[in-house]
Image (cartoon, rainbow, N blue to C red; front, side, top):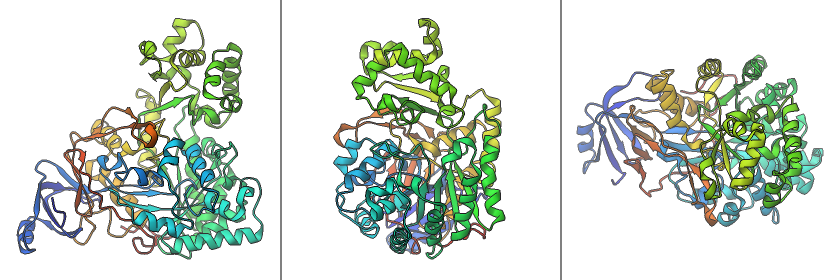
Length: 589
């Protein structure tokens, strides 16, 4: 199809506002929606030479979905399809989250920044080294390079705290508080980045985030004054937002983190988002303590919104690269070993006992989330001779071998290889308490259905699949959302939160970012490992069923569930492509 004029005929239009779907045609002319209704066929003929026709009979026509929390900052250069996001109906993504961006960067710091992104976001460093060229120094130059790089979806970027701090302070960024002069220089860099089109400021004080040398990331050494001063810079630039990963979110938020988020939002008069609320039967009031941050911020004239993944799928863990396991208390010595030596250490009963004990004794942090060892299953093994272990639960193997479930995990690694993978459920499907809490969170106005982490944690999950997974479970299986309400959650609501101009809805004049899907078939495919990154590096991949067409700026990027190879996505810049959503005001719908 040509893309200049497209007529989507015979579908049910769900416009992204939450309103009931209506039978209507949609006419697209030059990347914008020209008409919606029963008479669009005549309008297409009147427009000139007619339009390419998409038959949407029996299908829903919806605004393209948005993914506000991705890490495609590097992947866009070696994977212009931004796979697999468009396969799931996603037409707009935002990178630069968690305080991590690839600019600004001083000469000589490229390797440090690459290893930082690889370590924090669990992206194969070999893929990053092969795919990144660093044809920029400033954030403005990075945006210019992105703008000149074809891609299948629209993309915009927040400005990350780690790069700002490193650009000003050098290696001291990972050790010291900033001087007043250094803080002023950081603010100047951020002002310049936002003026160039950065969508906002992102940061994190999470102690679980470590750089390539195993040290806490630079924002962990910032003072409250530094966080607030940088956040306040957003208040000087239109159409900007704040994003923050608090250190204490695994514990339900400390008073200090709640105060900090409220102060940052109020200082900027901008919405601050964080992720993600946790559901943990062992800490039944955890989610309630996390959401109080929104109430404290509101009382101070700020606004804090939680982004929560909808997925009820499995999370994959391993001992190489071991993104999560390496952050567990007392496990740093194990991960200081080379992979082969690490595997050998896991064969030692004494080492197993120490590792298991330190996690069992933990009272906070990641250990509380991951230590339900009996629930894990073996996902894959390196050694084909051990293929019979795949699919077995650690509980069953522990009984068979007469050991603890954790010792069974170690034994599987010894037999199967260091990159052997395990999966654990995020929530138990038959756990009614967990579902009740998830239902409460997903329908809470303080929570936004987002937080995919697409492009990151590639050995653990495929977060890009969140629209298909949300639809399959929350619309079709559980009936928590109607199709119209889910489309609003995936398009109109996130577009309003970020103030994205003319996106997230179907109306004359809006951008023609559209998805045509079968509501009875939309869902995820089985997870698989693909070695399609630079250097043959692996990632987990989940496709989608039921997606017939995806249009970006009126150009088909997905046809019959497959990428077309066309790349009409544009760079989104603050001010030009966004409007200001003040913390003290309503969403812009």
